[in-house]
Image (cartoon, rainbow, N blue to C red; front, side, top):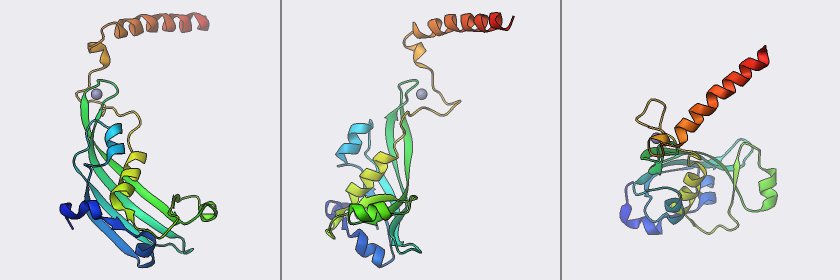
Length: 175
Ligand SMILES: [Zn+2]
């Protein structure tokens, strides 16, 4: 399964895989995923790919499963680096044209493949990971995550000054 050396040439044929009711389970290196690299601080590990290609009961050809990958992002609150495990829950319908995309049941994300040409597995994995990146990454509550105010001391006093006034105003309105 682990075949780092042949990765640049890892191409798959989604429709063929779906027609053959196939599983794709492998590790895919994140290095070389330029678009992903631009969106995170670091993406140098491997994605764990577990995808089933097949047909659903209505005979729509689908790609379903998970893609998980460790990346390093910057916490929005403390601006420190943090590792996150990005998990893409994949529920894709394979379509060959816009008409098929429109007919696809709503639970599927359409993946438009206009020809039967093999597609890069890494490219497909990269797309799914990008769609699943955290929009505003933050440390978990209770983690060693100190707000920006420690670094930019002006911010916090301002907030604290505003809050009592707001509370006072609310109090006055009640009376
Ligand atoms: Zn943080």
